[in-house]
Image 1 (tube, rainbow, N blue to C red):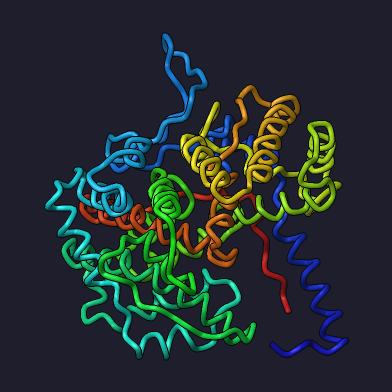
Image 2 (image 1 turned 30 degrees about the horizontal axis):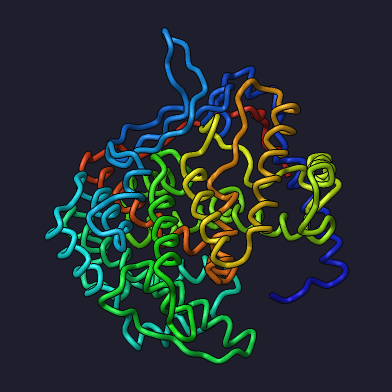
Length: 449
């Protein structure tokens, strides 16, 4: 973009000031008109806007009609997510099994899982023309934009892109589940080559590998990985695959799907939502915060030093000045986030094999102290726990996954949930989603010129 002249730059500053004044709404009006800001009740819980059978997020128990905070539970199509991660027909393919469950509402048999995995493998391939003309041209610094561009361009490669019948959308969804890992990894190598002048080597996915195994295979120069590494990444994909219809990117998919638009537009909108640091980009914030802590306090910081640093964070005097401890707190969960509990266990196992026990211990200490500090400062009675983002960045780092791919990995996983919710919206032929906004401005007479 061309820079403005000094004169226009000054005028633009005035426009910005006018825009800020025009856009400012008195926050007291939300209470006066009982407006659910952010589609949330005054206690922070989400306003009910739809029904789903795909997943259930549980953070409370009901005792004689009274809600009481409880250990978090997450169910996919009625199954506890911890069982989906820890058991199953083939532990190499827990993510594929989970995708099947989300899309079709039942667990696959051994034969069904084998056929489904074969279908996923058969759809993985990206044509040389697509890789050359889409992925390699003007690669984006933020890979989430590269994913959006690629997904939207797949529309042009589809012979029937606007057909929103269930069979056609299911076909498109399976293709996106299959192709998103390759698009993400190839986009990373393209950006690294054209912007960082690194060697460009991209590898095809191997038919005999699961999604998690192929990601590690394509990323590593020698293509080698351990069973534990693949198992941990597979578990992370399962845990990020779905989280109810109300999370920002999935709700975005519902909203856009309800308008009758095509699959590629709906998924691109979800990717745009997930890119935001308040949603999918939070694990990177945790990693950077922890790096800042290590820089200022050392890897072997004791409890008192860590607590002092966290207090500075909350006072806006450390790291990015936001006053936030990233990775702590959740809109729904109270005593614990079940995904964080599972990932923490995997992080400890992985740290032991990587010689990073001290790193893991620091994360554990920060979690303990942050929970205590936040509970003491909280204005509400709701307990505060670590969320899924707290350990996921550490796990990806131990797996030698580059930071640029942290949020795309979330998209690779969540495409399963987005697809399930899009299909659910289409099967039920829901109305176009249109919440209301209360006008609080003034009616004015137009001035005579």
